Image 1 (cartoon, rainbow, N blue to C red):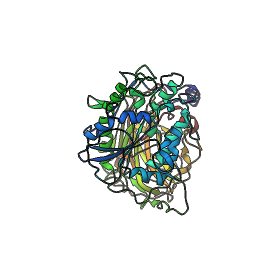
Image 2 (cartoon, helix red, strand yellow; image 1 turned 90 degrees about the horizontal axis):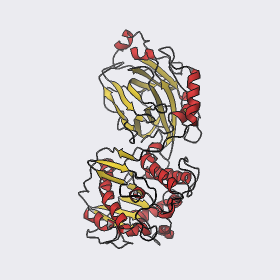
Image 3 (tube, one colour; image 1 turned 180 degrees about the vertical axis):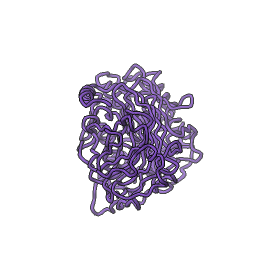
Length: 547
């Protein structure tokens, strides 16, 4: 077990280091990659200005006509479109007005019901009726002139800076999560020929593709990104479906390589984007369609709080203290435990109920992981509705580890879908935990707000507003984290829970029959390891991204 002095030194050094930029070429893994076009006609609308118009136009980018050939009925907006001329405003900060303002319901009603053309492309399909299901939106090339620095974190308001752009797109998710019946496709702004802000533009678009959804713990499949910017920075720069997988390959340039006499992409660049985009759109659509609701939600969350609007349903109390003993089907109101991992590295994770080992009954949750240096992996359980766990004092579970020194955390997601909060408690397994099942007990106040959210370090105090929980795996800088953990009898602390059967394995290992109810992390093996969240959050979890 590491000494506290050594840990303090490591933490201080790690906090001072700058995280490495994403690798030039990465392969993205998406579930159920299906590049085939939809079998039925699907209505799509594209929010754009001149670059998007060129991309759509027959004889230029040919996007509109080609989408039609793939069973998409295409409409679009342009300058002058919509209520209050909202179509005039498509810069990155303007997306707040579209999707996060008091006028959002008016704009979205007009957008979803628009069937007209505002660009020159041939439509051979008949309008199938109904609303647009896919919304593509793109800002024009001036939006690649982002001030600030490449690694700036999200800011506190929208503007044309790296931090302001991240803030804006984070805010958009609070609307998108209320419309699982729509697929939103963010198209990155095209590059400029001028290299002054090129590194900032590159860094922001890399963040959109690789980090945006993960950092916001976004779990729906109704948001996707196409890196139009990257495709236009060189013949070897791609965002496409190739050789049976999605690849995002970044070349050596960060500026526009396909000019048309100015910063509007050329015919060649626009057609390259069309060729690479459409198979990706098919994948995005098919992935979304698997779980898309048949009907629109009856009541969408209003972006601007209004006491006259219906309030979200009350949190559902846990009927008993047991959250999951992993013996039967998934807990009610969930899709079960799901793995997520750093798609830009060689990281892998398997998390499922298995019979390899169990504290009670026949199964436990096994997390078998191989996390690349500076990578991450997460096994998460999300609820369809808020859960009220206030009858418990915290969380308790039994833990078994294949070896010592495995760093992991227990995460709580709470608040509301439009203002999600993340709390964490970090553990390193000591040597003795590999010999049997260790009872772990955590008070609600042991969990603290993650470093990258407002109110970092604040103790958790919302057990009546639970959105989900997770077990996360991270690493120290430049070090991998490989191993296996088993979790069983996950319950609310302070409530008597009857196990599936008597825990025979626990008695053989010489462990106590019941978890300690101290409200702190049990020290069954002498000294379980937990780093202060405000420090280790910067070191280990700063790059952690959960979907």
